[in-house]
Length: 345
Image 1 (cartoon, one colour):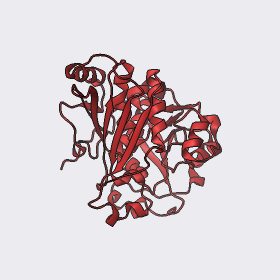
Image 2 (cartoon, rainbow, N blue to C red; image 1 turned 30 degrees about the vertical axis):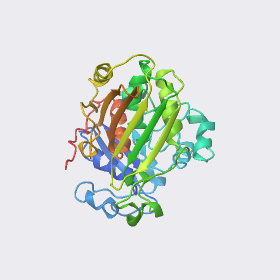
Image 3 (cartoon, rainbow, N blue to C red; image 1 turned 180 degrees about the vertical axis):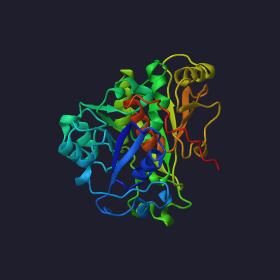
Image 4 (cartoon, helix red, strand yellow; image 1 turned 120 degrees about the vertical axis):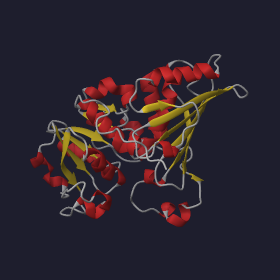
């Protein structure tokens, strides 16, 4: 019998859909409710037909959730909406995993500067734990509010953290070059995501002012103790899902290829979902899974350490990582319900 009751607030987006897909086959939880203000009263398969005969769920309004008494609620809501939910419901009745950016910073000022929104629930910012299990597992275990990381930051922080933590690179010399599939922009139609604009195309966007820049910098500083400066440039790939991130950094001391490779193997050898490769990874090798694949090397000619990492932005970059965090909070085996083999081809 399942031990825990969970709910999902926000069903119409890709993240809500992925949460239902993963949690519907999780052995230790039941989905008590899924909300949608625009589709309340309909079955979830009306929005997400791939869930037919898999998740027989009636969508409800968020106003009806209190009667279900969940142990934990996932917020699959846009930035700016999650904080209003926290302001209204608090943390006494159930734990929360928030998949928006509303609680990823401990500073209200940084959030408002980069998200251009007034934060209406700053009193909960200190309660939030950044939900990257490989770095903050011990804090997640006792958290009532987990701020699930952004997809780009997940793909950048996991390869950079060992290098900074072990004093191998200058923390102010980091370049992060990322490419994402279009689902990273959400399900709401946008002109730039129109098929004729995306197909056969490849574009950079949000240069110098992407809101994931401070998330990467602040999280690396919180984990390593070093103040970091990151030049982050995102790109849009003409694919539906997946992120490939390349980082470039300058060593602080003499290194070689073997030393760099051995560091990553030693840091991540016991992790469930980080796989260290001996060659640059491919997006297709993580599609549909909760894995982050990492390759690291050293270029003697330019004196640069290079990493290449890949994740599925909807799984390890969103819903899968949220379920991983839930498992930790409930004291379950961390990989429970997440042992999906990547879809290749």
